[in-house]
Image 1 (cartoon, helix red, strand yellow):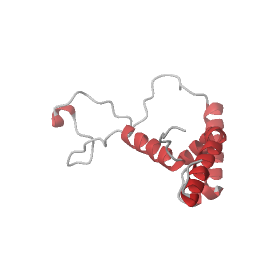
Image 2: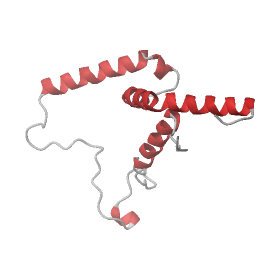
Image 3: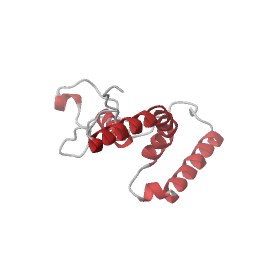
Image 4: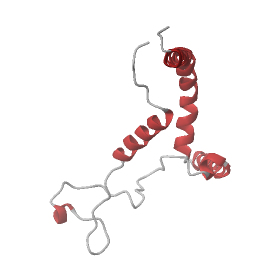
Amino acid sequence: MADTYDPSMEEILASIKKVIAEDVPPPVPRNRGGRAADAEDEGEDDVLELNQPVITGEPMLSESAAQSSRQALAALSEVSQQNPLAAAGEGPLEAVVREMLRPLLKQWLDERLPDMVEELVRREIARITGRDL
């Protein structure tokens, strides 16, 4: 059996959280008035601020589609609040990732655990008896 390192589920989740945290854009610089700094203020390119709705012509989404989306998001919010994993400090993303990783972890354990246990038992027997098997 080769000595390979396979990360634990906690290490995988920590790595995913780190990548997600790195993808979060930096905050928009603000000037003294509390508004976003102009390109002239910071010497940067123009930045489109999305803090006000842009209304040009017909809406991009029908009212029925918007209402349906709001209801679905409200249902998700309610479920995440009732989820015991969320109450333990685990957010919805972690719960989804954990559920996605569960079949992969099961497969990994099914493939590797018997050999790992056999190797560890063989080493322990060899240690106890003082002879290699």
